[in-house]
Length: 473
Ligand SMILES: Nc1nc2c(ncn2[C@@H]2O[C@H](COP(=O)(O)OP(=O)(O)OP(=O)(O)O)[C@@H](O)[C@H]2O)c(=O)[nH]1
Image (cartoon, rainbow, N blue to C red):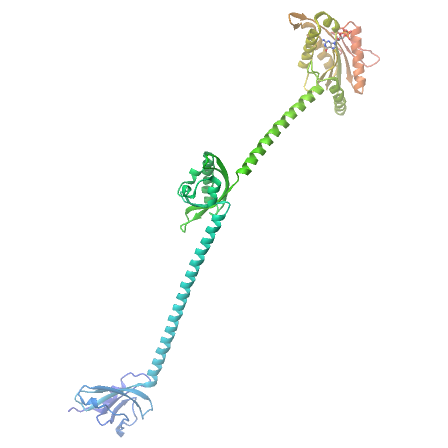
């Protein structure tokens, strides 16, 4: 038997850390409370615990438990009992029942909420699965729908892999080009093209690569391709194609539609041909018109302008000279005794002489000069911006050259001379008719003076200047 100091026991119990509502007590076997925490004010009053100590506690290290309400503080506790070896002492510790219940309730709530979340998750998962199934069904159905549409389209619907091998083509291709689907699928697109079509496709693929560098990738390309027909001919197809991109951003194929435009191409070619013909005809007509205009304005024998053209142009040239306040020389020329040439050598020889004179007049003319055959063996030269002196020198040059020049025809050497009259605007006339009349009068003077002469009209009263070698200045 040992002796326990009660105060030491009380101190030991006080040092224990208890949760609110819990208690611990040291009892003897008759249920007398020797020490307690929370402490009872007077333990020495031999307070008897109100619970029964379980019978099993008679063994030295026995333990037991039960539930009892404390008559000290009214708390209902779950009590545990421990026998302290061979001492007649028992430690009773009590856990507050309401706290235990509270813990149990929280646990229940936690479990309930957990179950609820589990159910919720299960519900969401089920719904998700159902949605995926629905989407799969819809996808399948839309693919079927697409396939049905594609199969029944009049246009060619196609798809290729990245290497341009056909992976799908609809029925319309066979109707358009004659090849069966089996003959086409798995073959390279290039095999279906004519050499011209292959060249076009090469260009388009280069364009596609260039545009991929600079622009958004899904650009549709449209172009016209000549494709092979099974019968050996060709079919023009208007192609619209877009690339198919993989999730890595690389092109994994192409797809698009093609429309047979052979008929349109035929019409276009016909139209182009007709247009070309029309353009040729128009060009020919323009040339004929120019030729006709030339004929209408030129003398056919000499190629010089004719009298009609001279009459139509003279007024305009005169107006320009008046506006620019410049002189204009009018020269009238005539071959001397030309009738004799015709009579002596024949009309053809006479023609040759006329042509030789025309050539001579042309050689000495400026761009702005207008030389015309006025009629028979008579010629007129209208020379803007030309003074009397310059006109005289020019005509003198013609006269002397002709005089010295034998005209060769067959084996003939024909020599001729000319006579000329000169009138100057504004000194000798204000209108074409006045100036032509005056020049003709001067020509007549030259003839009268013996031919092979030039006569320049002079301001009255000096009279005309007549001499084949005279200088008007
Ligand atoms: N070969 C040829 N002769 C032409 C042409 N036109 C006119 N004649 C001739 O030119 C001649 C003109 O004769 P005339 O008017 O008498 O003049 P001319 O003989 O030159 O005498 P003058 O003028 O006085 O020196 C005619 O014989 C015409 O037949 C032509 O285109 N070709």
